[in-house]
Amino acid sequence: MKQYYAVIDTNVIVSSFLHHDSIPGQVVDHVVSGRIIPLINQDILEEYSEVLRRNKFGIPEEVVSP
Image 1 (cartoon, rainbow, N blue to C red):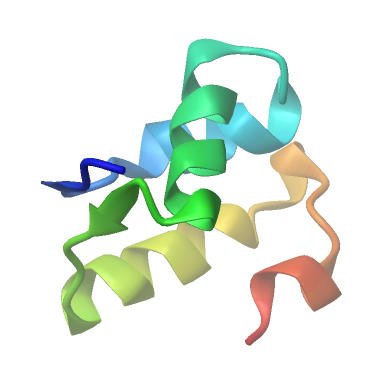
Image 2: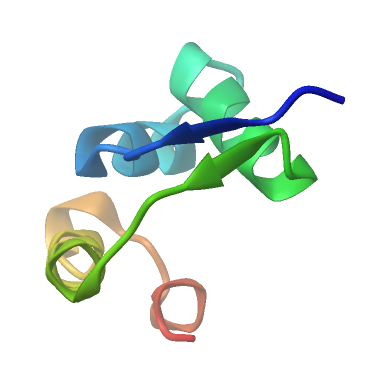
């Protein structure tokens, strides 16, 4: 299996939660399967955490927290 490295934009993460059967959902599926290796740093993790906790998305805390 060929692997790819990518920075996963916060919008892709949010869209995958809201519409799993979408292109962003497929991207996250590839991350989970190991086909895409996400490139992350502390700033990106903090942005994910802040954005995913916004009430308007309705993502449960247990999904957002490690």
